[in-house]
Length: 183
Image (cartoon, rainbow, N blue to C red):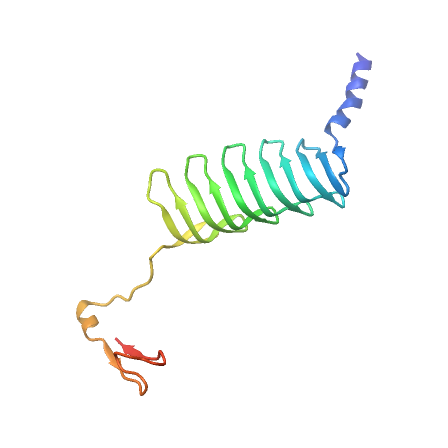
């Protein structure tokens, strides 16, 4: 019994420790197994993922794309164990730039991202609802497409709009592009 415990104790560190299992994991192409069970296959520079490569996490998530000093950086695709995917730009391991996120329920967001959240122009295509297009800020829709602040004017106020003539402009023609109107 003591012999088996000794053999098991000696074997576990080699199974659980981080190690290069194939190729050149310092400056070249190789395959590296991390202590948490994740496996990276691709280019290395200074013993870090750098260039193109694939990481399969111990939870089943998979990233295929560009790396810079061990960070997801550039174009890539993240395939989550849940079935969701993201294809687009990454900066410092986060979605950043233009990208497409496909949800497991069939919904899809296409647009700009910042620090891992929808940010900028984008559209959320829903399977059972109308598409939502607009401006997003850190994951929140702040302005629907076509939505703008309009003055709250009554019909009679609109009919009383007065145009001021400038010396080089009249109502029908403004050669310089200058003009003015007052409510």
